[in-house]
Image (cartoon, rainbow, N blue to C red; front, top):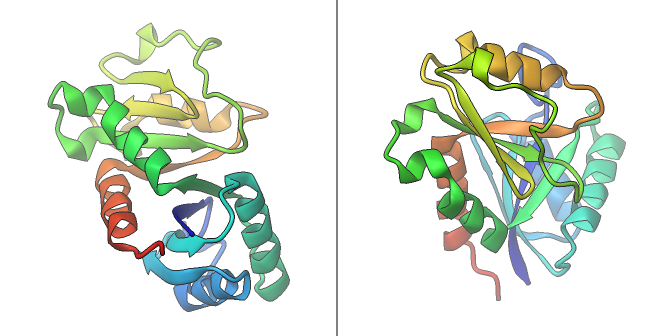
Length: 181
């Protein structure tokens, strides 16, 4: 049994993709996942799975949510250990930046995150770096005013979902508290 975190894209944002967290928990339990908990109303789920394959877990959860609700969200799953590595590798947290200005974009699938097609210079003082399947964002004026975040969201052919740094850390804390045996 492995502690995992599922991140749903576009749930309960701007009045669209409405999904009650009780329905999300019920969908996860219907998949056979244990110790299911949600965090805030934006589609964050912590649970234990007998499968170690995050892509299979994400697909099964997505299919179950779509079959049992009116929502068909993208679902991205990371194991507890993968999420711990995300926290450990954040270069902006390592240099002591204010957590309120840090965000992580979790890429879907197995594809590595990339910024190779973007010239970051015009976005300064905003910064971004790709590490593994994540994009780490430093947005000193906030997500709501970020031109970089808007442009990244518009990139064609990319899937993923963004979480602020406090949420990422809270989800890791919850995963650490989740019995996995």
